[in-house]
Image 1 (cartoon, rainbow, N blue to C red):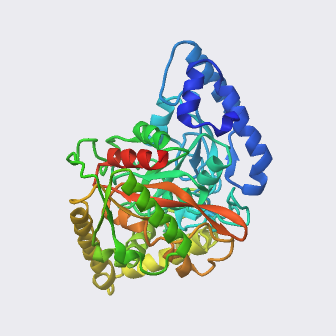
Image 2: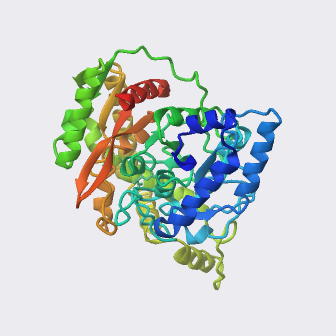
Image 3: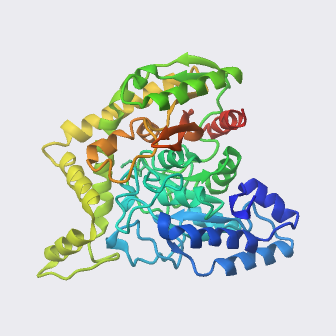
Length: 469
Ligand code: GLN
């Protein structure tokens, strides 16, 4: 197998055994970039110093140094700050913004010895489910370039699925790691809210956002997660590994049947039912669970997320960061800068968010959504008191054709299964569950496992068993 297609676990073993060097890994990934990135548009930028990074890692290893990711090439979504490098969140308003500090995630990855290949394309400010909302062109799905890779972390997913890195990081506010993982045949983890520091991540919805890994195996996802997790004094919402109580294993898996009644493609549902059978063979008991408010999750999410987004995006004013257009007066500066810097989706969400937070409508929309979110969280806790994980398909369909979901509402509906875990703060893992055929091409689809707060270990255990069977 060529070196760029190895799992991280395999690559680290080979590095350790001196069978390959980090330079070999980086060159193999770079060859895939040269061959495919002009078509796929997975990376917005491949860093010029990747070979220097690899040589430095090889030297450190030769000197006896070790690190969980020493010499492993990874891809980073364009909203994760790396000191001295650009981070644009795929927006014109931050096109030339250069980060002046490392995000905590990057600091931890550097300590573990990781190599950064480049920054990957995404929906502008992580708003979307297809990577079609990028200001810098759409990313294509390596399994079928006429289709989207999913989003908003579509560049990271496409980079990993096409061998341009050995692992990748994205952010997930409503499914942006899990959905592209499903569309690209990868494992994707949205950690428990607070498990990973958000310091140095360009925010979308601060009560929803989490950074997480894309990987070729559950074991790799676990390895990447363990490197980035941990409480951080620079993020007051971050938690320790012991914040949540340990959960007792039940060997039961809960299915919220009511959610699967409509809107899911028949063959995706068929793969899901086969997966449940497989879990049964593996010794799990499949039980029905009720999460009645999950039917409202999209409505809740599409009030809370824009509210938080409109607040977070207020800082892009042409004065402090990035793009700056001069107008007649200060207000005009704002209008000119924001009017030309933000694409259609951020503008839509800023308007929606400002509306639901406005004095006259706050109680009717934001207040209600907050109350419904609390109810949903209680229902999720109750459902998970009787089982190890709640399962659904990750998305109701496989990767869609570019341009197919041009109506924003139809795009939002694809998030039906993923937004709940962000609203409730639970960790959720997407694992490949086979393929479905579209126009002569086999397209991957994923199954999503959601566990109790802090129980990533439980997700990895189920995911590994499922993946191996
Ligand atoms: N698709 C969802 C949205 O458009 C999720 C985005 C995300 O997780 N960043 O908001």
